[in-house]
Length: 508
Image (cartoon, rainbow, N blue to C red; front, side, top):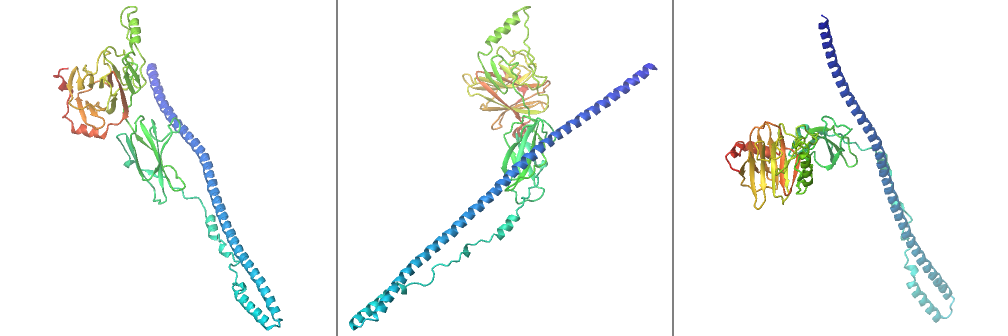
């Protein structure tokens, strides 16, 4: 009975611990949400302060601009008034001068005529009378216009600012455009491109353009403030749809948001949306590559002198002591526990490097570009247990296409030490499509999407991308979705391409 009670108590404690663990997990999740919300609020608070200062600055600029325009208009109108004043003054002064001269001549003639009345001699009087008549006929006083050429009225230069004053008094903030709504059903993720579509909640004919922002993230759901990348912006989008192309999908998701702008102001951002951008991303595993290969993330280059000194050191260590070779160990990459990094380095003529991420399911795609002067290289996949002396395509655990540019160019598909010559031009870039669950490995011209060759088999172990290079270099591009054209070709070519079994009877 005591044992039963003890067992019962233990079971009860176990249940309580499980319940408590669930409570702890729920609280931790809720705390994380609250912490994220606090960070969002702090970020928004800083944004309010910064944006308020920015708006006040813009308002100062606008009013300074109005003041400047008014000052320019005042200066221009003042100049017009002064020009009119100068013109009228000059005209009146000219008239005054002319009238003064005419009056002076007329007074002199009047005095002469008055004196002539006292002349007694008839002949002298007649002569004087004729002179007076002639001078009167020619006198400027009788040709003068006795009307001012200009008036003193300046009312045509007066202004009435009553309408403008009403307009200025009616100044108010422009209506802010409402936040757009992203239409998830119309958004598309394909071929390493993302098409975002949105609409306005109501028609707004004052919208001039939109601003689309995006950023990569590994968090599902709403964007987080902490540990997030900065938003990248696409400005002056005229329509309500935009396609971002040529992306590398090196994150699990992408966040998107959009806002509308009129001629003067931008509205609030739409609610952000998160789209999945899944693609295979891997680097080359330099820890287990051949010592004659120089490996840097996605680039591998043949180095004829790279392994000589290190090989001698390793041989010396292996031959020291018991005489039994001691395989060199290296650290395992954090990307996957299935990588080959903890095994010996490739050696001998196996100038091989593998990817650091295992493929265990799904459909994946990556591309490889060789240097123009590369003499020999292979591109394919292998199981993680590929031996350190093994070459791609010469074992039943590896599949590849091999290009040999030594003396003459040959192009062949290889598996299990059998080869099939491919009668196609070697492309500049080779696309590799791996359907793990469907048991297909296909090679494509990455530019034209022409199918080069397909292996059909059943993969029984996780696969690693594999590469061999001799006298040259290879660049690997990952983070690529399976192209739509490749998906279409896979469906149409099903059963029509070559297979691994077709190599069994073909000599190397």
